[in-house]
Amino acid sequence: MTPEKIASLSRKEREVLCAELRDKIIKTVSANGGHLGSNLGAVELTVSLLSVFDYTKDKLIFDVGHQAYSYKLLTGRYDRFDTLRQKGGVSGFPRRSESPYDVFDTGHSSTSVSAALGFARARDLSGEDYYVVAVIGDGAMTGGLAYEALNDAGHSKTKMLIILNDNEMSIDKNVGGLSRYLKKIRISSGYISAKRNTESFLNRYLPNLGKPLVRFIMAIKDFFRFLVNRKHPSFFDDMGLVYYGPIDGHDTKSMIKAFDAVKDINKPVLLHVVTTKGKGYEPAEKDPADYHGVGPFDPEKGVVKTNSLTFTTAFAGALVDIAARNKKVLGLCAAMAQGTGLDLFAYKFPSRFFDCGIAEEHAVTMAGGLAASGYIPVVAIYSSFLQRAYDEIIHDVCFMNNHVVFAIDRAGFVGADGHTHHGLNDISYLNAMPNMTILVPRDYVDLRNCLNYAVNKCEGPVAIRYPRGKSFYDNNDLYSDPDDVVKPHIVSSEGRDYAIVTIGKMCKTGQDAVSILSGKGFKGIHINLAMVKPVPESIAEMIGNDIRVYTIEEGIICGGAGESISRMLHDSCSGVDVTVFGVDDKIIRAASQDEQLRECGLDADSISSRISADLN
Image (tube, rainbow, N blue to C red):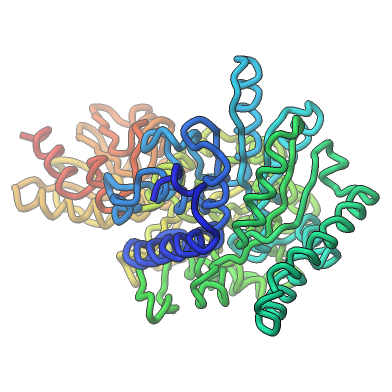
C-alpha cells in the first residue's frame, strides 16, 4: 500500500489497512524492541493524514518520533521495516538521511511545532504552496519549547496545522495543568465517548437505521459543540490559534473530514485528536507505561517484567536507603519516574518527590531553588535529555554552588535508540562548569558509594553518570572504605611498559585489554577512576615518569576525562606520553552497544592492538 492509493480506500478498506499496520508493528517491535504503545495509538491518525496531505510535497513533522512507525511503513520502508533499530537498518525515529519524506530529524520532545513554524515561514518567504503539519503528543506539551512555538505561531498567524494527539500519556502518566485542562475538555464535551457508545448501540439494535441516525445525531451535537466552543474560547484560542476538537483519533472518516475542513484556513489551527495508547494490542492498552519502549518480547505472552539488577535499579535502591536516613533528600525527574527508577522513591516518599513533566530546564532551576532553601535535590535525568538544561546547570546551580545532585542515567552508548539518545557529551560539558564534581561509578557498589558521597560529603553541585543496563561486576572488591570511591585505584600492576587509566565501567574493557597485552609480553599498570573532576592528584604519583599512558572513557574525547588527565600528568610528570581513547565527533547510528563500542575502537581487541603497535 502506498499513500497515493490510501485516499481512494473505503472506510472498511482503511480498517483492514490499519489492522495490517498494527500487526506489522507488533511483530517487528516484539523482535527488535522499540516504541510500541504510542505507535499503535497513531495508526489511524497516520492513515488519515496521508489520505488528505501529499507526503511528496507537504511537510509532516512528528514530535519525538514515537508515533512515526506507520508513516515509515507507508512511505517506502515496509520491505525494510524488519531492520528497525538495527545497525544499518530503519531508524526508530524520523531521519532525513533515511528518506526524503522524513523532513526533519526528531528524537527529543516538544520540538515539532517550532520546526513546523520554521518550515511554514520558509514556505511563505519563498512564495511556495504546501501544507505544514506538526503532530505533537500531549506529553510533549509539558515541555516549554512547545509553548514558545505556540505563542509565536498564534502571534504571527502563520498558516499551519498542529495536531495534538491526546492519549493521556507521555511515558509515565502526564502531570501538570495542561493534562488536567485536556481532561476537562474531554469530559466536558463528552464527544468521543458519546459518539462511540451511540454508534455501538444503534448499530446493534437498529442495524438498518443505525448509521443514518448516528450521522444525524452527531451532526446536531457537532453544531451545538461548535456554538459552545465559540462562546467559551479555549486556552488555545486565547493564544491566537484556531482550536477544533476533540475528535476520535481512531475514526478515519471523522479525521479525514476534519483535515479537509481545516487545511485551508489561513491561520494556525490546532486540531485536538483523542487516541488510545497501545490501541489494538490489549496488554499495551492495559499497561501503556510498560509498553512505551520495550525490548524484544513474545507477543503472545507480552512483556515479562524482571527484577534483575541494573545501574538504574541500583541507583533507585541506594537513593531510598540514603533518603530514609536524611530527610532533606528530595527526588526530581522530568516525566521519567519509571525510567530513572524514581518511581520507587515516589512510592516511599511521595511528599518529597516531584515530577516536573518533560521540562528539564524547569527541573534543574527548581532544584537550584530547593538547594538554596537547604534541601538536597537529586535530579534523575537521562544524559541526552540533561543537555537541554545546559544553561540552567551553569547559571542556576553551579554559579551559586548549590548542592544539587545530578543522577545522569543512560551515560555512554544506548544502543538501538541511536545518536539522538547517546549520553556521550555529559563529561565534556560538565567539565567546563565551575564548582562541579563529576563521579563515574564502575559498578553497583561504586554507584552506591558515589551517591552517598555526593549527598552527604559534598557541598556544591555533583554529577554521577552511569550507563544503561547491567554492570560487569556484581561485587566491588576494590574499596575497604566507601569514601575511597573518590581515590584512584590500582586494578592490576604487572610492570612499567605502559599505564592504562579507565573511567567508570570501562574498567572491565581495560582489564581485558591488559590480559591481551600480557599474552603478547607487555606488562603494565591499570588504574580505575570514579572521580574525574577534580582529577585526583595522587594519580600522578601512581603513574610516575617516562611511561606511555592510555586513558579509556565512553564519552566524547574533546573536553572529556582523558584530556583533563592528560593536562594534569603533563604538569606533574616528566616523559609522559598520553593517548586518549574515546569517541570523536562523528555520529554513531543505531546498533547494539557492543557494535557501537567497536565502531569507535573502544573494545578490548582494538585498544590492545593500538597499544601493542605503539609499544613494538
